Amino acid sequence: MQNFTYEELKQGLKRNEEYEFYFGSDTYSFSCNEKGWYLTKFSDCENYQTFNSGLELLEKGKIEGKYIIEIFDKLDFYLF
Image (spheres, rainbow, N blue to C red):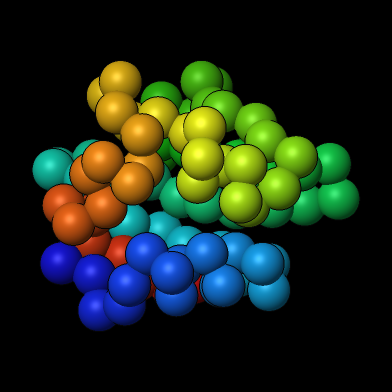
């Protein structure tokens, strides 16, 4: 289970912090470069979601058909 709040995650993404986390037995990441933000499932790196900002990623990104805020308490984060 994560050791920070959803609001703290939002603030971290505003600072361009990148995160790796587990959801169930799968590993995911929130990452960015000069072209945008990405939500990536490590076991399926060819299929990723792209966003203009970290905040857009939080608002529109989905894992297994659910928005991040809906499953936030089930995510196990660590900073990389």
